[in-house]
Image (cartoon, rainbow, N blue to C red; front, side):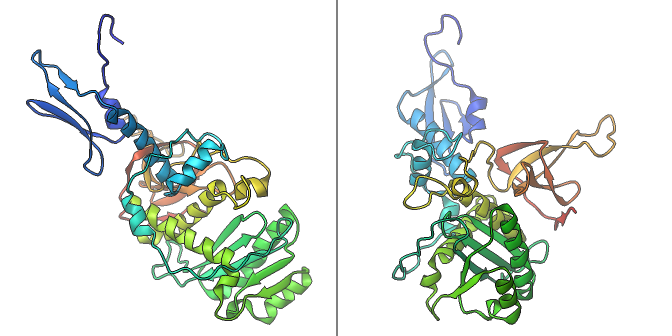
Length: 368
């Protein structure tokens, strides 16, 4: 505040920081949003000051910008779900959002679509985690991932709705990938009791049966040509694909990074989606604690990482620049693409710029 001043000052730099484009011409000034909508406007006074027109729009649109930011951080989650998470405090560190904060999101229109719905088959009600697990395999994906993967193995726990994804080069890797994940879950909690899948041949062979029998797993099949009976995982598949597409379109991320987008979508869904009939997320039902979203960032945004490995010259930059790809599933680190080394790495020494994105040109290399 300026002593004696009878009007409020507006910081132009802060308007720019929240994504507005501010322009000044001879007689007027405007602050315009990303979609060309005028958020603030003003006129030049006789004493050569630019006076913003006072109205309620300036306050509501600034709050709307916050809603848009969190919409993108949470994988283009629909507004009413964000409001529910905020009001009911289902997750920690999410600011209060109002129901009327609605907007049109271009990436959502590209990444999501409405399909003809099948008749809903009532879900089986399991009583504890891993009592019933749904499984499906998506693919082949037309564009290989940066590590040559073409298939997505999806597992969903019926009781918690917690989801796991694994990426495969060939269908023949399905059994080994499932075996490793099943043993990891057994070490974390207990063994899977029932696995449900469709009648695809990838899940019907003697090797699968041997593994089931040796670990006491019962295998159920959905009826032929009736994917609705495996509806839990089918719906998760759709949500995964729609969220991944929206995030990639949102920052023009290269198509061969689809696996990173799907992996991040799975991470977000586990943290922010609420299981029907409860007030808890899959993460809380599985882990027993309320998730925090304070560290969430926009997929594909620009980041700056501390360069603490190479010897730097006196005039060399102390950080590297690149693109944010998601979260580590085994630690608190972030997954990022380093522009200088052309490698995907995990790091914690990073600063994010959610307002900008990095255009990738070179095929990245995954660090060991």
